[in-house]
Image (cartoon, rainbow, N blue to C red):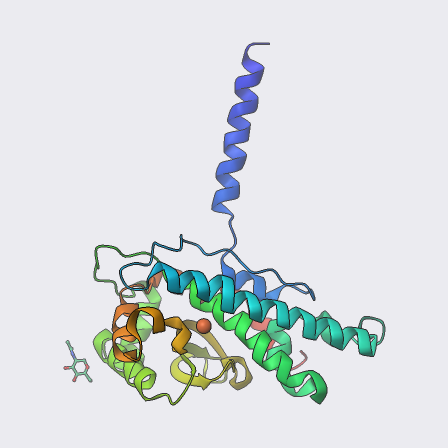
Length: 261
Ligand SMILES: *[C@@H]1O[C@H](CO)[C@@H](O)[C@H](O)[C@H]1NC(C)=O
Ligand SMILES: [Fe+2]
């Protein structure tokens, strides 16, 4: 009998260990088919992105802004379903928010801007949180493996890519995002693009693997109006292995974007 508790406790710790390993990244939520999305927890603590993004900013960005987009998106989808009895008559809402944003023109006009702004806000932030990680010692980070090679093929070298991406971030007028994506209409070629407000790159057939949020709420507490400082600080936090993971994840989902969608 004496070995039973120890077997049980080692099983328990094994289960806890695998549960920790299996923790979902925020981007994985965007393909769920639900009208009640949850706010994903961040893959790091609120304080851990310091000194590049301060704790107060991460906290209000996640629990204030991102949470509000989540709630309003859910409310918009529920209203759309309720008023149209969609689950009974149409399969559109049974698609994930990702698929809905990819085919935004199919959303009835009455609900479209609510879905574009809040659904976009939900998805864009899920992606944004997923590609950063703490870097308290400011280690140099660069993409390696296939992504590193593709970076060289598309942009000549990494510093040139950084320069082009930064230029887009500094020239974007108003609020929005800058993205690095795979263009599915060009065989997965890497492209840099920008979107304003909460628009998503999916409408253009881009699968985003890296994104910076350049709404003022992403940096105003620490940097006030100094967007260039926000962008140069953010580069330190980009986690290229997470970017690679996201790149692989999209490859497994390519079927979502074929025309029979
Ligand atoms: C990177 O590419 C740019 C643009 O082609 C070039 O001007 C620069 O010299 C290159 N830098 C390095 C370190 O190779
Ligand atoms: Fe944001």
